[in-house]
Length: 84
Image (cartoon, rainbow, N blue to C red; front, side, top):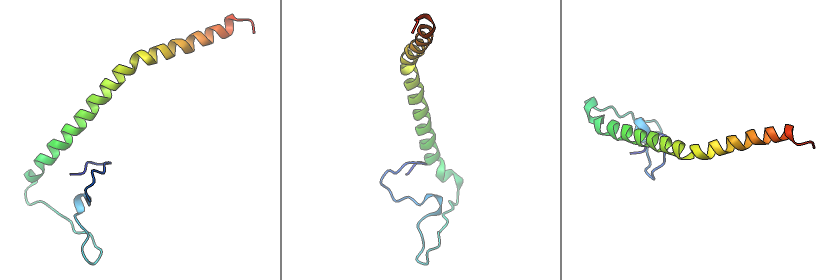
């Protein structure tokens, strides 16, 4: 299953299925919407994991951002304090 925006090596045609011989797209409609439950659960799990990774990445980078912010502030203060 290819997730939106990803290429997992599968030749996925989205919800339209494979192209027919005459070049038109074949629409694949499941008889029962519950057939998509496992795909929806997998997609939501993947999105939740991505969101968690982004939160951790942001938290891990917070000290570096604070140091950079402090450095910029000191640079601005030194510009006014040093007679250049």
